[in-house]
Amino acid sequence: MKVYGHPLSINVQKVMWLIEELDLSIALEEVDIRHSHRDAQAIAERCPMQQTPVLEDGPNSVWESHTILRYLVACYGNKMWYPDCAFQRSCYERWMDWCLSSFQPVIKRALFSSASDHPHAMSSQAMSSQAMSSQAMSSRDMPSREKALEQCRYHLERIDEVLAEQKYLASDRITLADIAIGSLIHSLHNEASLTLPPNISRWYQQLADLPGYQRWIMQAESTLPA
Ligand SMILES: N[C@@H](CCC(=O)N[C@@H](CS)C(=O)NCC(=O)O)C(=O)O
Image 1 (spheres, protein in one colour):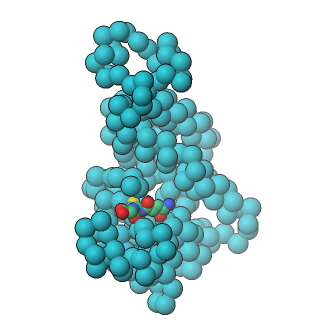
Image 2 (cartoon, rainbow, N blue to C red; image 1 turned 90 degrees about the vertical axis):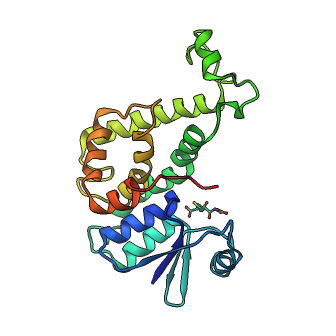
């Protein structure tokens, strides 16, 4: 078994971190599909979207990072990672879907878009010189990065409320919800314009104690999908 991908891709990092948690010996085959024709071809043969990560398990290729996470726990995880009860699985799966549909796109805009992306954007220097607070601007006029940071703060507050009640996102044990969303939190922890709320900070420290998180998430500089 192997995973095709680049170690700086957040979607690849999620998969590699889970592999370490499951104690599986699956190597990362580093590919650079932007610059290597050979790598691009290898991925195109395995994923119609020509994206990574792709897991190769014997004759089967599995693509989409969260599908790979689900596949790995279903095939190789114990009952803690893959409970028999469909409702119990839904408790972490809803976080995974929310992550891909709502949280990750906002983080991508907040951390990887420039303030000048928006037609009404002004430099942060110009903003501060006019003492223009985000509250004073209508959300329509707010530069897209600022708007994304606000959305990000809103999402973080909601996550924090959940973590006030339990140790991990979906239960008192680590689940795929923590793998999916926890992989993104390290980038936010390093972002100067955001402060992680207290329960998220506590949860982040729990994750930061895990060797797999340290190796795949913290030691690499994360990027989000192109
Ligand atoms: N939703 C997909 C996103 C996959 C994706 O966007 N992968 C990026 C790398 S993170 C990619 O292969 N981009 C094409 C490229 O780099 O040319 C997943 O979660 O697996």
